Image (cartoon, rainbow, N blue to C red):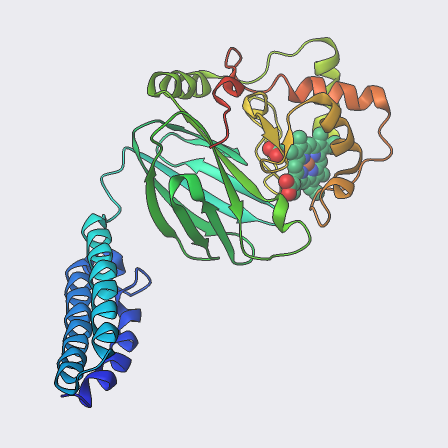
Length: 320
Ligand code: HEC
C-alpha cells in the first residue's frame, strides 16, 4: 500500500479530462462523477499523509511536522474544492438567452428569443440568469468577463455555453484573451447590466423601433451610407443589409464603438470613418480618405439617429 499510493496519485489526474465540460456528455452529466472523483482523490491523499505520519511516529523525530502540515493543507484545499463542486450548476433554466460570435476584431451579439442583433455591447437585466452561447465565424477566440465569472471559448462551427447573473447594475468589461492578431486587445465586449424594468423598456422600444426618421443632414448621410457602407453594415428600416461588419441598427444606444473600445462620440467617429485601420490595425473596414468632412458629418448624423431614443445608458456606466 505504501508503494502503491504514490502510483495511484499519478494515475488519478489522467482520469480528470473526462470530468471537464468538454467531455462528450457535457459538464452536466458528469457532476456526480466530479464529486466522487474529488472525494476519492481527497481520501487517497489523506491516507498517504496518514501512513507518512504513522511511519514518522514509529521512527520519531521532527518528521511528524511533515505529515501534519500537508494533511491540514490537503484537508483545507479539499474542503474548498468540494464546496466549489457542490456549487456547480449546469446551464439551463435561463431567463434570457444571449449568443455571441467572434470576428476579427469584434463580437457580434444576438438575442435568439427576441430577434435583436447588436455588437460590442450587450444589455442584460440585473439579477436574472443569462445563458451565454459563444461561437466564431473566424478563428478560435476566448472571451473573459471577470466581473461575471465568465471565461468561454468561441470555436468555429461549435457552440459553447455558460451562464451568469449580474448582481449589480453597471458595466462589466469583457476581453478577448486568445492572441489572434495585432488588435487582440481591441476586441472587447461590454455587458451593460440594467435594472430589470429598464431592460424590459429597452427591449420593447427596440422591438417597436421601425427605423430612423431622418431629416436634413442625416438624410444625406443615409444616401452616402447606402452607397458606401451598406455592403458591410445593416441598419433596420433602411435597405442596408450587409453582414461583414457590425449591425448598426441601434447605434445610438452604444456607449462605445469598435467592439467596446472608443466612446461613441463624433470626435472619435470622424477618425474612425476616415481611417479605421489607423485606429485598429488589421480591421476589416477600409479607410475612406476620399470622403470630405461634410460627408463624414452627414454620416455621423445618420449613425446617431439609428435606434430608439430616450435611453441614457451611460448613466448605468460604472465599470465593474
Ligand atoms: C468592407 C466592409 C466594411 C465597409 C465597406 C464599411 N465598414 Fe464599418 N465596419 C466594418 C467592420 C468589419 C467593422 C468592425 C470593426 C471592428 O471593431 O473590428 C466595422 C465597424 C464600424 C463601426 C463601429 C461599429 C461598432 O458597433 O463598433 C462603424 C460606426 C462603422 N463601421 C461605420 C461605417 C461607415 C460609416 C462606413 C461607410 C463610410 C463603413 N462602416 C463601411 C466593415 C465595413
